[in-house]
Length: 168
Image (cartoon, rainbow, N blue to C red; front, side):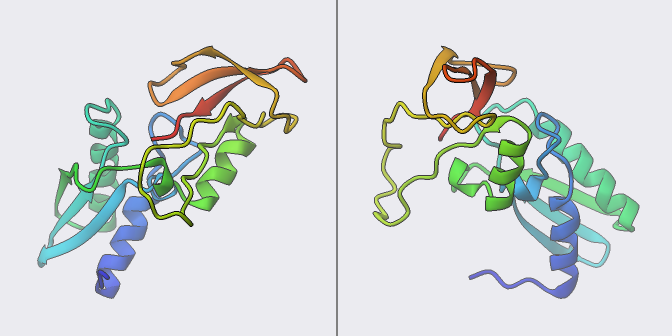
């Protein structure tokens, strides 16, 4: 278990409050990509950030926005490091993040079966709940949508198209 100083906890909250550049309805905390904040010496902070997938084009914008927020808070030297291990998973999205996605009209990713503890592959299932009407009678229109992490689907019941945040 990681223990942070009160200042590190505050800085973690600030870094986590940054909106995701691709899904501004979510914060980086909601998305679960800010791994840690460490005060390495007075006036110097290191933030560890994990992209949703290797090569994610939003990582640069996330880093810049974190640096800006912490500079505005008064931290003179901010370093944002990209860490790939442990890899990010859609299970890192908070319950609040999943709620915000659904309210925004994006079907949130289905959580892995935490009870099994298998850590294995995502179970294959065809039911994705429509964020508009709640029906599970939906169809895949495209494996990719506005971003690589989303698929485009349509609800058969209400005929509304919607994005589905893919499970990783």
